[in-house]
Amino acid sequence: MMPISELVKVARTIAEDGSSPLALRAAQGWGYDRVRFLRSSANHVFVCNSPGREAAVLRLRLDGVGVNERSRRVAELANRLGAVGAPSAAALPSEDGELVVRVCDDQDRYVVSLFAGISGKQLEAESLTAKRARSWGRGLALVHEAGSRLEDLPQLPR
Image (cartoon, one colour):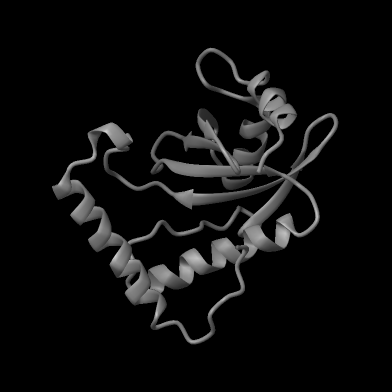
């Protein structure tokens, strides 16, 4: 769980248009020149854009014990699942070829990863219908089925 102090700290860097110098510095490692805040939960999440490029999703998390390794394993798992047919967003390598990088602000270090953007609606719980729930369940079943085809199951955080 992310401490409230961390949520507030990053929220204070977000401009009215959703941009953030910290997130932009992170996104530049992938060649993106614009970011827009989406949400914060376990990670700070920003949408990245640049002319002539597909949008991507930046995940930024305060560094700590094991954070870099867990983030790398999640990125690798996303790519492995996609390779066996799961409907999942691929982790994208930075311009240096890394799936996970670290960036610093004045006080802290962050672990950053970037995922391909996917299309579709973001639904709120109130708009969930039986048809949409079945569709979501089918998608989740496809991810699980694809995961069953992986040779070595990764150790992920619980």
